[in-house]
Image (cartoon, rainbow, N blue to C red):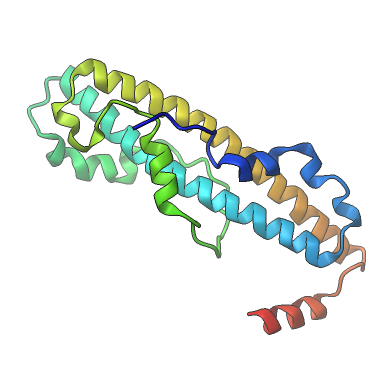
Amino acid sequence: MTAPTSAAGGAGVDELLDPSFLAGVEDLPMADVRALRHRAEQEEVNLSFTRRLLQGRLDIVRRELQRRAEHDGRSLVDLLPEILSEKGRGPAHGLGRHQTVQPTSPEQFETWVNGLTPGVDLSDVPSLPDAGLEQAARALGAGERSLSERRRGVQQVMDTVAGELARRYRDGLADVAQLLADESRHG
């Protein structure tokens, strides 16, 4: 397994985060602005899915390190309900957005997450040496921080595009009836 060759989300997110992505958005036709919004939403969903994969692995690795440090006699399998429950995690940091799209390529995102820990097989965490677990925890933690930063950037792009759409409706530059007609034809 090799290390990820790109940052979370790859070139698609890189393009969204480039300041030129939003350049001139106020002059684009309504359909183009909606397309930008949809594209940003898709990338945010992809990053969110990837973060959930990564966070699950990180939670398991950290809990195994804790179990060993505390000489907890329970097995990691016995601890899974606790690890996977909401109480095992910190507060959510998402923006509570309702998403209508699904991740585009789950296997690609899983490959990226797995690539964060080259040489460390997380399929049998209890058999890993402490050094391997610590290495995995550091790599997954760094990956999660980077991914979360990129996700926040994509969310800012989404907010900017949504703001532009709202401005157009507020200023009478767009017609809600036309939007509904367009959506009924394409829905």
